[in-house]
Image: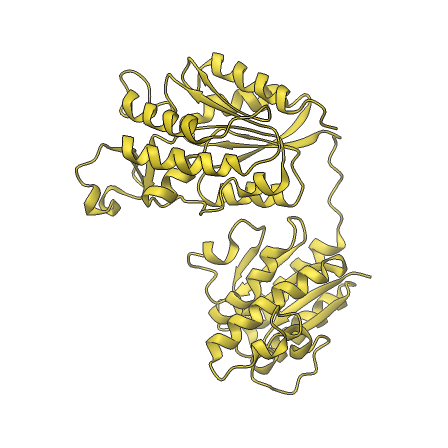
Length: 401
């Protein structure tokens, strides 16, 4: 029978974690206390610290350190490998702790597939939790008081968390009322017309999953690709790569398109919104960019037009990624502009910058029967481009079950 893992440091939080476990089991759900404390304490947990430590790639001794930071970091690695190895027996995972406990538990949560319930009660949950959650479906609950003893506040908060976890595990999700397979699409505000029409026209045959290309959005799509939960990708909006190369705030990191290469999933890509790098309010744009073409998208988002040199670097990055893909790849270049504001009369219209991007991709991609780059005489949001993408999608899906 699968169990909920109640994860935390038994040397400092045994009472709180035991309280969570007891409430989960009182709700009729099996639970295990997994102790990840690193002090060498005597533990009464179901899974002892040394048991978890033994899953470290370098062995249990890798977790032994007088430096608490190093020991916690090593235990986090061990816990991640532990949950990967025992994933088939995990019904859900819940943790409780401060910044250290949160940093220790959440990598293991992120390693589990989307859909397995994940809940972290944390003292840092009311701040920026992007580093902890990443592309995973982790629910963060603010602890209000520190996770340091049971009191009238912590009992209520931890109790709510325990009951939420028990409810997620005990109640089945209604089956999806379709046998359509899932296709991933990437979208930004300036590529919405394209992606909306693609999703509408695919909906009769597939289940379209649209991801907002905000860094985490791209990471989330790639996690689903790695998990085998999408059968094809329409990666129309690769703008996160511009942020990665130039230094914007919406980078998905250096592994963008990496999952496509690892899985050989059928892939149709394009250069949507690569005319822009994203920053916050205008006063957050780095001073080195003060003389650049800036466009205030809204009070919280400032866009910066990419230059020919930057686009050359972006194109080379994309080409390198595509060359690593062994599955069917079609990559489309919209000669009429890569976004809504990269069109005649619009703020980011710059044919020379676009041409630098297109040339870098065409020059560096090793084209084969499986890997093809094509120019389309249209803006990325034009109906002509929509039709070209759908044709390319049908092409890469030939022979797909």
